[in-house]
Image: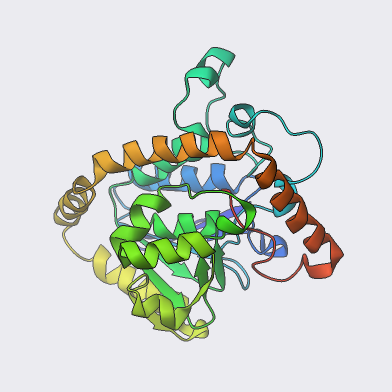
Length: 294
């Protein structure tokens, strides 16, 4: 087994790569180097024939609560196109910086470009969702092939309350998983699902006791890893091919929506109100720091 420290921890257990989001003091809110390191871990898995399956979970009591709301509120706000291709939100992405001309012509933003990197892995992925997975954290979980939830897990989009629309491909993946009506309700309200309701909607494949979550995820990963790898790879390619072109189109549409919303006064007011609520003493409550961005 090997391990690597940082905002993302990486371990090897046989043919399984275990990836832990490692900012427990912030409930694994997306910031620091989480995005960069997570994409790098997936890239490492893609390049290593000894890795057959990737399992992602969160250190501490949270999977990932999305971006810190404080990153979205207060202070001078650059134009949306500049904001969505910079590092003010979500920390380091590991993406190559864009020139001014490239930024003007960009149709994806950092969120879309980063999602394409995560989506490109052709090996099975499992999200072991412990505690809240909200906003960008929900999007990270949904990019995995299989979701397993601990009993205390809570999942939700979190975009609507601060005047934003979904990203990370959520607007494509969520209705595919739970159906259009359920997806619309969740996106329009931003409400959180507990683990049992997420299972009823088939958003997660199973719910297990919190203390057994990682054990169940690793057992499933080992079972998949024991299969002839080329057959599993071909199967994942077929599953992704069923909506691969749709993902690219949807990421562009999500970015176009955010270019409008991040410049709108209603969104600014909602972000500021959320930041004020957090500053009043609710900052350390899991799920409260995060509501949107990767």
